[in-house]
Length: 612
Image (cartoon, rainbow, N blue to C red):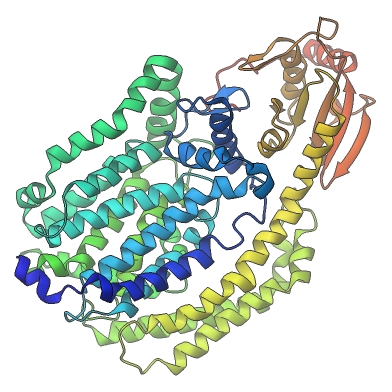
C-alpha cells in the first residue's frame, strides 16, 4: 500500500503553492474587514456576551448572558471567542467586539479550506494527475457558497461545527485511502472538538456518513478496523465528556433539561421557535447553497444515485479514488438527518457544503463520464446566470417586496447603493465567461467562473454588510451609548418590543427584555420589583437602593400599542425605529395594576428555555 500511495502522492513542497493560494483567498474572503461592522442581532451578541463574560469573570465553565446561564451550545466556541476578549487592550483594537467574536468562525473556515485543498492535491481524483487547479476550485466552491460566506463571518457556532466535522470526515477518508500514511487518531480529535462545539449531533452525522459509505464499499468491518472506531470513541469521550459531566454536577437539572432536553432532543422531535419547514426544505437549501454551480452538484448526485441503483453491478473504486462517493454519502447523511428533524434552519446545511464542493469540482472530470450531462450542466449554469442578471436588473418590479419593519427605508437605501446592479453585472460576466470557455476541455475550468464571484466579495458582499450595519445595527449601538450616558444610580434598563441582545452586549448591563403584548407591560413592572439574576436583582421603588425611574428602549410598533401610550415618559432620543424613554415606575405600576384588573396576568416566571 505504501509504495502504491507514493506513486501518485505529490510532496508537500509541490502542494505548498496551492495551499498558499487557498490561504490567500481564505483571508481576503473571511478575515478582510471582519471587524468593520457590529454584531448582528439576535444570536451573535448572545455568543459574544457569553464569551466576554468568561474572559471578564474567569468562569470558563458555564456560559452566561444577561445574568443567566446559557446552555444552548457546548463551550468550545465560547472558549475560542473568549481568548480574543482576554487579550489586553481588546477594546482599543476591537471596539465593536466583532474581531474577537467572529475570528473563530473565519479561521476555522479557512482551516477547512486548506484541508480540502490539501486532500485534493495529496489524493488527486482525476487520472492520477496532480492538479492544483482542481484543489483551488474545490476550496473556492466551498468558500464562495452563499451559506459559507455568511456564516463564516458571523459570531455563532455553525461555522466551527462545519469545520471541525468537515476536517474530521476528510481525515477519516484519508485514513481509509492510505492506512499506512495517515494517522488514525487525528480525525477523532477533531470529532471531539465538533462534539464540544454543537453536542452529540456531530457523532450522529459522522457515524451516518461512515455507515453509509462502508455499506456501499461492502467493507463494513474492514473500514471500522482501519478507522479504529473503539479507541477513537474513547478519545472522543476523554476529550469532550468531562465538560458535560462537570456542568451537570454543578448546574444539575436545568442544564440537563435545557441542553439535552430542549436544544437537542426537542429540536429534533418538535418544532422550536417557529422553525418548522416542509419536508422538501433542504432540497431548496441545497440548490441555493451551491449557486451558481448547482447544476454541477445535481449531475454528481445523479451519477451517484445511478451507480447505487445498479447495486449488484455498482462501481467500487480503489480507496484512494473514492472521495467522490464518500462526499456523496456525507452530503446524503446530513440531508436525511436534518430532513427528519422537526426543526429546520438553513444553517443546518452548512456541514454539507464541503461535500458539495468536492462533488461540484469533480463533476467535470471522469467521475461523471456522460459528456451530455456535463454540457447540460454548463449550459444550465449559463442560463441560470442570465436569469439572475435579468432578475436583478428588473429590481424595480420587486424591490418594494423587501419589507423589514426594523428598516423602513431599506428598499430605497438598497436601490440608491446600486448593489443590485453590480450583482447583475457579476452574473452577466459569469454567463459571458461560460459561453467563451464552454468548448474548453481543461481540468478546473470552473475556476474561470469563480473569478467574478470572488470579485463580488469586494464589490457586493462587504458593501452589503456595511449597508445593513448602518441601517439595522448602528441605531442600536447609538441607543446603547445614550442608555449608558443617561443612566442614574441603580436605574434599571428595559427593552420592549424587538428584543436585541446587542443592547446587553454594548451596555454591559443587565437588560429586562420583554415583547409587545399586554403581558409584557405587566411583566416589566413585576420584574423590576421581584426578579433576581446573577449579579442583579429588581427592587421596589421606595426600597433602599431602589430607583423611582427606569430607562426604557422601545420600538415604534410597541409605542403604537394603546397600553404603552399615556405614560408621560421623558423621551431622551430617537434612533431609527427605536426611542429611549425615562419612565416613572409609579406610573408604570399603576398601568400594570389596571391591566391586571382586566385579566392580564404576569408570565415572566413561567419556564422559558431560551430566556435571556
